[in-house]
Every structure is written in structure tokens, then in C-alpha cells.
Amino acid sequence: MSAGAIESDQGPEYDEVLQLEPDYPRVPVEVCGTVAVQLAQSPDGMVTGKLISFAATDATKVLNGDETRGSVTLVSGNSFYIGFNKNDAESQIARIPGSTPITIRNNSDIWVKAATADTYVTAIVEMWTR
Image 1: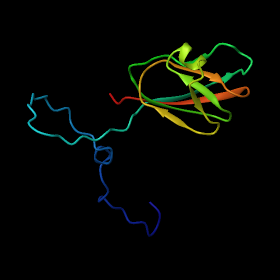
Image 2: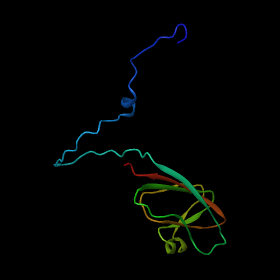
Image 3: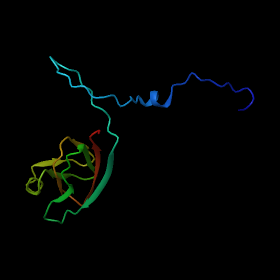
Image 4: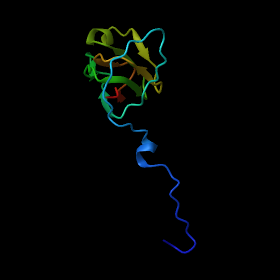
């Protein structure tokens, strides 16, 4: 310890900072009425991307369906079409403008098709908490 430094034991413990709780035994309960809930942050996620060719006639699958996926945010520099299956994306119904992030909160397959030019679609995935 350097000269003039003051040692203190008043800081919180590591478990307290993380708000960890001991593994208490589980007790079944019956809920009567409404209950407030709070979405917990996810400890897992990933970032991936694919180059989508405008010349391609077929849509490209960006992500497989995943029951552990909580949400995915897609963004691209150019416009693209999105769908939950190949036909949806190829039908060009849902067009996402370039540089506009879209967050999808389901666990379906994600298909895209370039709308105006080759584009790189980035997918930022958040998994459910465990």
C-alpha cells in the first residue's frame, strides 16, 4: 500500500454487487391476482452477418429458428426484404429501409433478400436468460 492510502472495508462484497442469491430450495406457490414482472438481462448473445447479393433470385437464410433466442436486431446499409420463411422474403412484402435497425422478438427462421443492391446484413442476437 502506498503512503497516504487509506484501506477501507466498507465496499460491497462481490456477490452483493452481482446481486447473487444462494440456491434456496424451491417452494411451490399459487398466485392470486396480478403479479409485476421484470425482464432480466440476457447473459448470452452473438453477432453475425451475411453478404446478400442483389443478383440472387432466392432469399438467404440469415438465422435458423432457435427456441432460446429472445430477440434479434437486424441492420444493413441498404434496403432489404425480410421474412420468416423463404417465400415471405421473396414475396417482397416487408421492406426494411437501409440503416434502419429492426428488432424481432420471436424464434423463427429469419430470411432476407436484397432490395436495391448487394448488402451486408448484421444480426445482433440476444438469448433468453437461463
